[in-house]
Image 1 (cartoon, rainbow, N blue to C red):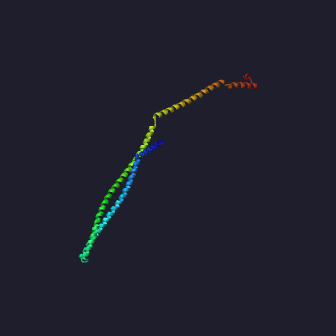
Image 2: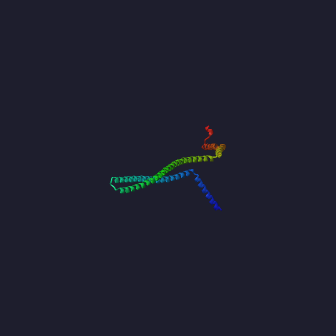
Image 3: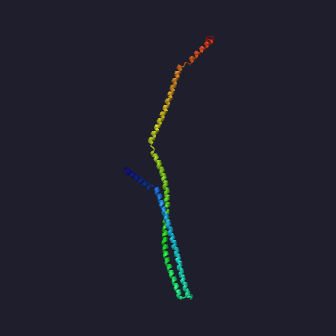
Length: 238
């Protein structure tokens, strides 16, 4: 059962991830541009092929037109030679007839190639229109993508800033400052108290030393003993 739950959670996470990716406008736009560029490549390839067929049809039309005119001129020349007695009339009629048959065949080819050329030329016009439209859309989408990326950067920066500002609790900040202020005041008071204690201790020691100081009395006693030893009499000196 736990395995199924884990698989379900994994599948759900992957589905959510896929949805997030699908909903990413930048990635969607980039994919759209790639698809349109692929369509453009296909349209350009088709355009080149149709243009080649149109050119070929036009060339064939010109070729058959030239042949039809040539057969027409040959038939006329043969008939003139027969008229001038340079060629047997029956032979001239046969050859002129064959030339006119060839001319008719060429004329049919002219009609066929002309129809094909018209069809290909229309396809070329339509494909050129499609190519132009795809190029225009690609350019428009690329510009929109640049704008979208810039907007995303600005929105992300604004979002992060607003998030930081939202996470700042003014009341807790004030409370923290008050605590720090109280702590500083407490430390200052403690320092002052230690100073007072030090001063008080020093004053008491001074008072005690002043009362119990026997240095001067001891010095006077030693002076008297020294004078007595030297035989100095204070009364005589007086």
